[in-house]
Image (cartoon, rainbow, N blue to C red):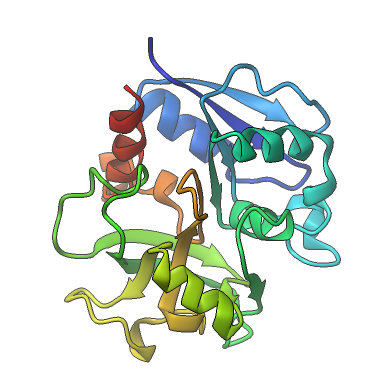
Length: 231
């Protein structure tokens, strides 16, 4: 039986249909929208918190969405080993909910950044990355104003010690330096997992890099990883 995905819809989500399309039309898997006021995860095996501007990003990005009723179910789901992916604004929601460590602050440039970036895969043993076999960095788009990941020294040490850094912003040849960092993120961090490895947050948008008609398909490897580990 194919795994089922659930895509959460918050007021202000605008990448929910992108995620749905990538999963339904490109990956050919069962997927349903999950309204934020509901508690039922509809027997989903993987939950996607999509990008956008949940609740208009008022207060802080993800700070209000974290209190939506469905988040209680998602937190329980994650704590019991369920797979959860937060993309862009979804990553911010996971941070606010305490499912991942650290915070997001405004881009170093104080400008919204929308462009393709290269990502080095830092942990290839994760359910989310094990099928990304390409040695060179992958090319995935970003679109955010507050993607500058920050954490204190103790948290950063834990991330390193537990191999929780999944992706870093890099150059085409894999260098993770200031020049390849689009937002000022600490240590060029673009995506992290929790200690159990079942919750991932990433700022880039793999769902926007799945359809070859768009001229990019590296994001498909990300979803292939999840599917290959669940089947």
